[in-house]
Structure formats: C-alpha cells, structure tokens
Image 1 (cartoon, rainbow, N blue to C red):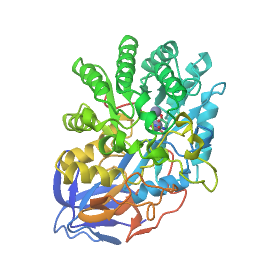
Image 2 (image 1 turned 90 degrees about the vertical axis):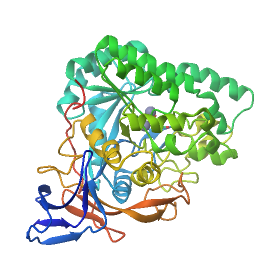
Image 3 (image 1 turned 90 degrees about the horizontal axis):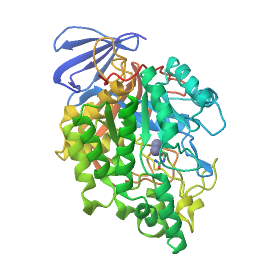
Length: 470
Ligand code: URP
Ligand code: ZN
Ligand code: ZN
C-alpha cells in the first residue's frame, strides 16, 4: 500500500476542527498537513466541502445472536459490511456464554464465527450467562485475550439473567482485573409478573411489551447495579439506557464520582411507545428496554444527557429479526404472534447510526459537531480500551476514516439498505448528511456508492481496559 492523501477536507475530531490534509501510509495516519504542503501521493481523495472524521465505533452489536428461538439475522459478513456502508469502521460485538458452558468456549465460538468474515475491525465483550467459580477464573483469562468487558443481565430470567449474588461475584472479579461490567438494567423478575398478568388478560399485541416493561423498573435496576458496583469497586457501564429514571441514577452516581458510564441508542432518541402500536406491525420495534412514552419526556432527557456528558456513548444494540421469514434462520418476529413475550427482542440499526445522530443531533442543533465525533467514535474507543488506535485522527492512529458530506441527502429504506433484514425502523426518513467515503486501515471500502472491501478485511482487536476510569 503506497501513500494516500485526503485533500481539501475539514478534519473534525472530538476536540477540534481544521482545514487540513491527512496523509496515510501502511494503514496508519502519518501526518496531518496544513494546505499547500506540496506532498505527493499514490492515491489522492478530494474531500472538498466534506468533513474528514474518525470512523464510527459501535460498541453494541449482536451479529448472529441466538435469541428467542432464532438468530439475529445479520451474520458477521453482512452486518459488518452494512456497518461500513453507514460509516462505522469498528464494532464491539457480544460473545455468549450460555448456562452450563465455559466462557472461554463461548468466546472461541464467536471468534470462529467472525474470523475471515468481517469487513471492518471487531472486538468482543463477553455475555456471562453463568457465573460460577470456573467462569470467574475464565474472566481473568479473557481479559488477557482482550475481552475486557462482561455483560450481565438483570433481565430475561431463565435465559441470560444473573441474580444479585452472581453480579456481586462477577463485579468483585472485574474490579480485581480492571475490567468493566456492562449491565442490562431492567428488573426482569418484576417485569415477568406484569408479563404474565397482561397475557392472562388477553393483552397479546406488541404494544403490551412496552407497557409491562415499566421505566421505573429500569430505574430500579440501574440504581441496584450502581450500588453493587459501588460496594465492590467495579467499573460499571449501563447499556442501552432508555428511561429518564435510569438516567437520574447515572447522574447521581457520576456526581458522587463513581466510575459509572452509560450509553443510549438511536431508537430511544427517535422512536417511542407509539411505534409499538398498529397491531402486529409493532413487532418491528420490540426491543428491551422498550421504546418509551414520548409524553413522559424520556427522549428530551436523553438528548440533554448526551449534551451534558451524563450519557457518554451512542451505540446501536443492532439485533435484527425479520418480519417475514429469513432465508437462513426462518421465522423470526412472527414467533410472537398471539404472545408479545415470544417476539425476539431487537432492532436493526448498525447502518443508520452515524447519519441518524448527525441529522437529529448536529443538523437539528441538539449537539455540536465535535460532540458528535466524541459520542459516536472517540469515547467508545476510550471506554473500551481502543484509543488512540481507534477513535482518533492523529499521527499513529489506524486510518479508519469517514468522509462525510454535511449537505448530502439520504433516504433510509429497507429497499436500499445493506443489513440482512426485511424492514427499516426508519423507513422513508430523509437524512441531511451522508456517508460518502469510508476507509478502513487506509483502504477505501466505501466510495461512489460501491463497496470495495471483502470479507476478512476486518481483524480481531484485543482491547485494553477502560481508559476512562480514574
Ligand atoms: O432487545 C434487545 N436489546 N435485544 C438484544 C439483546 C440485549 O438485551 O441487548
Ligand atoms: Zn441488553
Ligand atoms: Zn444488546
């Protein structure tokens, strides 16, 4: 690979903005040059009128996740390619340890699924579904392998659920190793009571998924997770935060100086309980935590949290299931016809995050351009031990670069998206701001509305521990 020069663009990072050219050699940024430098290159990319930004980092995806009797529809091949189309150049996906299985075996299985198939670089968190003496030992081994964060569930009893004792044990171990506990904070035991009662009343439509998973129960679980983290000294990252009650708890913890962080996702910023209505069509929007009641002010609080750094990251929780049959995995959302609790939980989004957050955040005046880079790339990299290899345009960083047209238009649609799922949660939405060119380690993988990469371009990232903790 010779020299590549990105010329005439506006380089935007989490902290500044400059009229500069970016020189790339051997997959890395080697210089950021003032204009008229006279430097020649083998390949020149003209970025006039465009932003040149660090590629997106989506730290919450579920490719091929086994869930609710089927599998998330995107494989590592289709899902990472779709991510690239959307300006994301790194994902951190979730390897799974199921009950009775060793965590190392779970990680190795996910490494095999991803190996040779990814369009962009990838790392793993580990879902620890079975905390026991053996798992605790394996957590240490996994940290050495670059899996430095462990997702636990206070939801989904009988599936991924951990009780408070298991959470405490895992947090003690994580604190010892410098690892992070990522928490799905919903009180699943209480929610299941409401689920049973709703079904007994004959309330079976998707809308009831949103009614029974009450926001106060996300607040309660978030509070409990924080207290358990405090007593054990663990670093805590709340995933897919959707409710103002949960945000209140995070704000309080951060004000107390605890190592607590949280992410939210586009679906909680743009969609609401109303989307779960309209009969079974609402199944498209079934995810957990659920979309919240807009009238209660959740969305506005989440945007405020992003602005004030009470929320640090926007990820997608990309976990797509088809409304019709999937060509490989068969029946998906329809598994929940007549019983909302059997609808596989999850929504597509890995391809849409950068444009949605630019459009709704920057173009509509809710956050600054630098903050956009910070919450979609730089902080995710720091949070999960990837910075400054990822999440930066700096000398020595990987040349994972997004060239973004702030005036470009893009209409989101299932007819044109690249995710392997038969609907879009944002069908027909017109975005101001368009992903134009994407480079992964210096190689152009998206340009001129074409994909130029191949499976296996993406490599495994052994991550360090969080760079945000003090
Ligand atoms: O509904 C969701 N979020 N599905 C994916 C699994 C999870 O809890 O993140
Ligand atoms: Zn979750
Ligand atoms: Zn998830």
